[in-house]
Image (cartoon, rainbow over all chains, first blue to last red; front, side, top):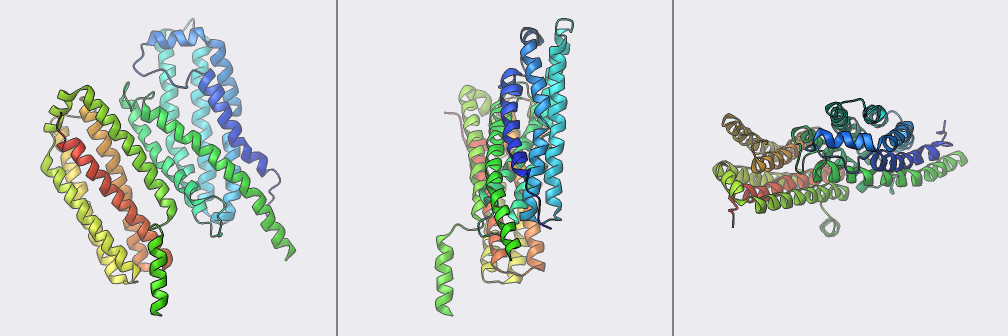
Length: 239
Length: 198
């Protein structure tokens, strides 16, 4: 029985919806692009929550609402990936589960930022700093679930035996590389300043940039792969 | 028959060794390390005395031994790839074992070096020099472990699967990665252990 690809295109675009919301609402409105440094005193973090409570609240509410788009995107990838890795390949499940589980740390950490902005006037500075730290520690250190998705995606699409693969090989290897590079997030809890702190060049600027490139590139080739699969199904039906 | 072999050789020489996609991984990794080297250099310009003092505490002998270990291991890998190209399973397996056996010396030496630093109470939090030393060599060591795992998989494939075109692409890809691990260490060794403050 051929795959039903009717809604997959919409689900694939959810990757871009997630990225847009993540950058604008979580990043810019939430005050996380770039983050406050780990070496900033509690009073600075507290002032940020108190002065921008409504901005942060709005940013996190929208961010939490649309975080699920990442899982929807992962399911669309899985649907296409079955045609490259094989219908029963565990790589497809790993990719889908990795994408699905990525939603959890993004949701939970966003709720910490939201909690900080909920009643910042009555909370002491140190508690507001703790909420901000907890959110960043969780979102960075939950990298491994996303790494599972990225590595499984890369390895899975590399199994494609088409002359022109559904996902170009360079994208597969880039995906594997990004998944491996995320391990550098392990350094982040040990530093409050410098290149390996949460606001540092490696742990923020490089890690987030390579992720911001990864998701749109995968979405682009995913959307291009869907009509090809439809053509293949139509061709198979005609025979 | 001879003409056909020549034709294949010419075609293969024109192409990148291994899967072209692997080069994306390698180039991305090299770019990341290039940035680390730049960060280290900027750090050193900012605190030349501290970095020079830290450099003097590193064991140059072990650093040099690691360089020779990785170069020898890379040579064994080249031999394994050459053997795979002529479908010589026995030599392929033998040289892959040699690559792994010699390469594992790097792990022994690196762990000994880390242990000595830990015993002296030095960690990546001691100062900026040791931060770069532990992080850069640590990330390199992580790459080394991935390489070892890839060679172990190649060894299993060489023993159990057909030594065909597909296997040759695989082993060439692993070989390129292994040379990258080697090359990165060749950059790290002078940068961390040898280069004196101006």
